[in-house]
View 1 (cartoon, rainbow, N blue to C red):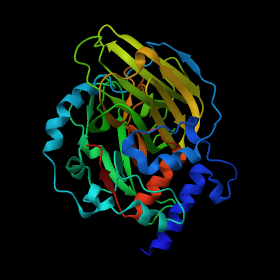
View 2 (view 1 turned 180 degrees about the vertical axis):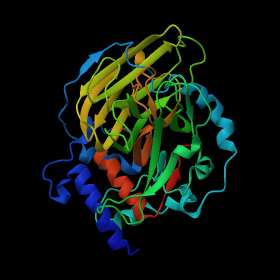
View 3 (view 1 turned 90 degrees about the vertical axis):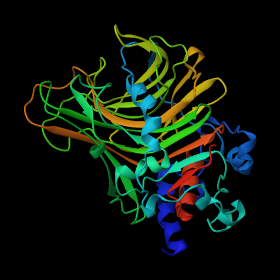
View 4 (view 1 turned 45 degrees about the horizontal axis):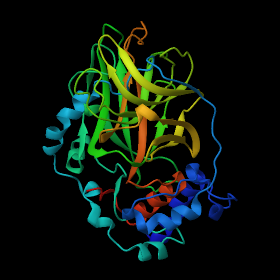
Length: 392
């Protein structure tokens, strides 16, 4: 594809997602809380980040130290502990997913000059995946574990399937015609029938930095009757080594399309965890909940600064947490979709739900904005980089 054509198509995404003044949106980018601090490893981007920072509006939400919201992966710690061996047994990667950090090693100056004035590309301390695979068996070669077997979270009879993680063409006309999405599914036939869920985990070991993903949430099932309490997520986590482990860490975006955990409507939970005990259930966390319809595309972003966690949805600050819930241990990066235990309806027949993920981006030890990350995704796509990991 001609580079100018590719840039113009991705600029449409940039305009829609960030309303940059360069796209005619007017005003400053907003800056995701006005934080422009970064580590020495991000020297190529610090000046651009500083120039783009500024105030943003914050959303009201209900906040509490709560035990009502279940951990996004309260038993995904078991999958995390097993994923190291699983990810090492990787399948051969397709040509679409074979790009590594070396494929994005062109200089910042050449990236900037070919990008029509966008910020320089960040070279060091980043993890980017465009999810341009053909099948989930290719993901382990890039460090992802696609979960299988049993265990929580989810319905008591649930299992996890690698076949429920697939890759589909992006039919959005504003995207590149070659763009793909990661599609994650969950199905159930009720409490007595089979329930199958899906999860992917990147075992990286991260704490401070900026975590972001572009995710499509769905309210309605793809087939079958509606009403099951489904959870669609983007989160980070460490294994729980024992009950009330003080070194446990977890940061969650969890969208409940049909309510649950004391709610009856579409609700987004932002939860930061100190620790928990699975049986009997005891949770030590801080959680904010927003009752709103979040179906459709959204950019989710978490900034983990020196002593504070900030959650943003589409550049809007929606929650700020600190204190005991600040993560103590390196975390993996995860997506999953699952049914709340006890929240499956008595309806007969199979019903299914899905969420899509366009890309995931992490900047280690760097606090950067939504708009800046979207620029970086555009630059990576211009470089035809589908996977980059320079976090080591």
